Length: 190
Image 1 (tube, rainbow, N blue to C red):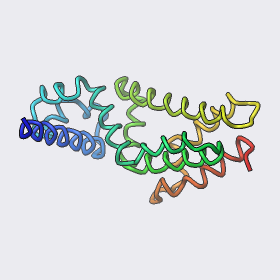
Image 2: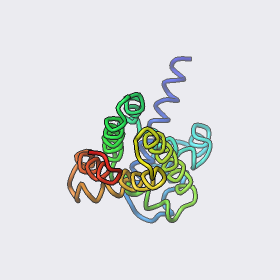
Image 3: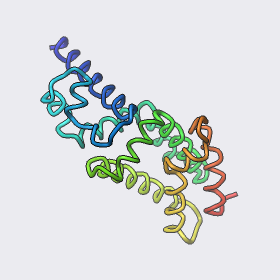
Image 4: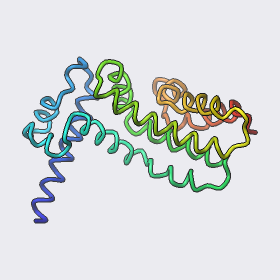
């Protein structure tokens, strides 16, 4: 049983690596298909469906894989921090690491979201969770315009903001202090 599980895990890893490589390679937005990922991973198409259920499931797993690499588990510390300003700063730093984990794939996924409904559904759901997290943090701040603060912070913590502020060759995680400064100014924190 252990040997079989190792094979399943190794196959899953190959599929995730192949999906990220296919996204990284660019090309036509129609090139990212379950068939193309299966060919790249050297597995049967049925294997991809068995392990991920659908193209959307595969995309979710790719995002989860990047989240693990980008240490998104650090969000728990941000939400546990009793100081609302420190919690927000930590939230921003975690997203800096996450966005930086695979910048090219992130850029590609977000661009594909405009063209592919499957990708758009995954990205929209993840953005909604980021917005919910920000709403929870803003609820702890002493600010009258909470809805506005959430909208502004949602924009500031987007991949696009970090990507732009980091510059073409910069590390997105290094943009986090600037994002934090902008966020604090936007919500009136010192």
